[in-house]
Image (cartoon, rainbow, N blue to C red; front, side, top):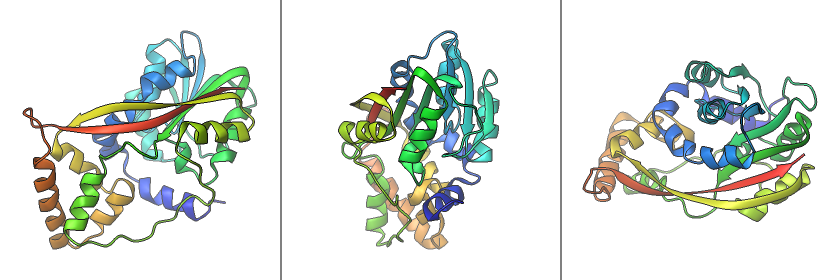
Length: 266
């Protein structure tokens, strides 16, 4: 049975597939090339993409010639990924219980997923179960430092003097560092885990970026969409002012992004 954190995640992502695909999917998708490479994905590889979202990692694996199965806990994401990646077998499944026999896949990838399940260690152990001996796993999470993108929204909320509720957090958290993520994999039974930092610049128009939380995506989205109309409009005014002062000559924001990638073998 889902605990408080998992139940919150299900509510938070319900019905958000299409706006996610139009907004934050590009930000998250920037880590995919290194993710699939680290997992050793190639022609003929059987791959499981867990928490596929809009299907970005699944699509990358299909382009490499892999035989791809993708799962997500949100039915809307399953529908969207199936539409975006017709070459993949896309199914509904919720960690930490997957509907596959032991040793089903050569490689498993999970892009910004492990931090969205109540028991990350149990989830990683389940990924190990469905990976063949010698197979690889590659996972990403947002790094503890180096990310400033969401600060645009928190600055706007602070300027509008909007308080934030306390949302459920992971009962047992882990360090969002290469060492912390590699240690989490080791604790779940994976062999030779290695972690490293990824960094890139996300270029996006201020309005497109705003549409993520304005559509209710993530905890900040729950805050913004839960505001009275007048307060939400005030937050948007502050956001427009702050973001407008940080755009380049092309009218785009250049947002630093940092993630941790960890890989290990079964």
